[in-house]
Structure formats: C-alpha cells, structure tokens
Image (cartoon, rainbow, N blue to C red; front, side, top):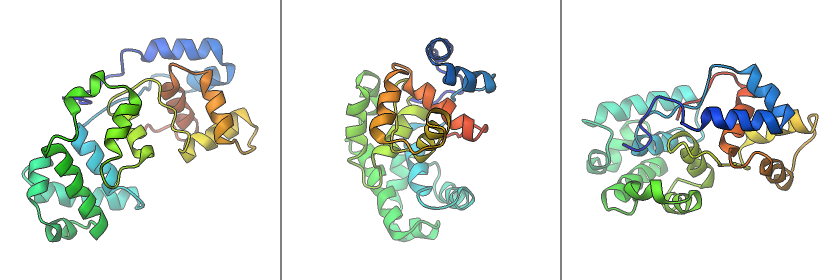
Length: 211
C-alpha cells in the first residue's frame, strides 16, 4: 500500500550527507538532530482524511473528531465513508463543510479519479494537480502529502509558515524572507528539498510530526 511504511526513505542518509557537504547552516541543524528521520504511516485515504479533519482546529480537537469517525465506520476506507450520510458525519464533530469535503474525498477514491496506483510513476506536480481537485485539499495539503506519505524527496512547500520562520531564523538572522528568496535558497538543497525542509522544521520543534 502506498505510503504505508515505518522506515526512513532509502535516500535519507544520502540526502543528509549531500546537504551537510554543501550547506554549513543546514549541516549544523542536521547534526543537532541525530537519530531521527522522516517516517510515513497510514494509507493514502486516511492521511488525506485526517488532513481535512485537522484543518483550523487544535490537534486535541482533531484527535477527538477522528476517534469518533473511527468509531462510526467498520474501517476508515473510501467505501465505508461514502456510505455515511452527512448527518452521521456531522455527528462525529465535523462541520457541515468538512463533512462535505470528507464525502468528496471518498467519492474521488471510489470513482477512480484518484489514481493511487499511478502515483509512483507521476511527477510531483501531476500528483498535486490530481489532489487539489478534491474539495478541501489545497496545494499546501498536497505538498504535505507528498512529503509525509509518498516520501517524495524534493518538495519545497514555500507557503508553509514553519518553513518560512525557520529559514528566516537561520538564514536571515530573523529578518522576514520572501517567497522568491526562499525558492532561491531551496535551489541549493535540490534534489533533497523535502529533507532540508524537514530538518528546518525540527529546528523549531524537535518532535517529528506524523501525517
């Protein structure tokens, strides 16, 4: 199943070595966070479903809603979720809009407009283009999915506030960084921009996030 693994990506050590060699600032961050790496857990549908649940609410609230969703279906899978009506989804704690998003995500999986079997051969932008057709999934969510579920090595989510904050702190002495400057900075990390992003996140919060 795509994205269902608990081991580091095969490229992780190679990427770390490359970033350490070419970027002294990144080298310091990487060395400050040894023995941790990116992990992917959960299947594609559940990862995207949880991203919808968690939008604009606290982690604690999202966990509570998710627990109720899990309790409402035999398994959190597209067919089972699509079988639920909107009132049942609302009863789990989802807003009216999120309930509609949830159903729309399930529909895309069950009717074949989400092509998980093709993703290994599709480039990053093609996967993003497919995902953003789902209501409630924007570019940032799609980029998080590429990094945390598909383990794509070269994603630079320039709209991510954590990445902006960390880049400002480490590369601009706390001064704001423009998206153009962030993209330029990221050119030096290619083809391992996901790895650089992950370590910049770690510099702000040493506990890895799992999606």
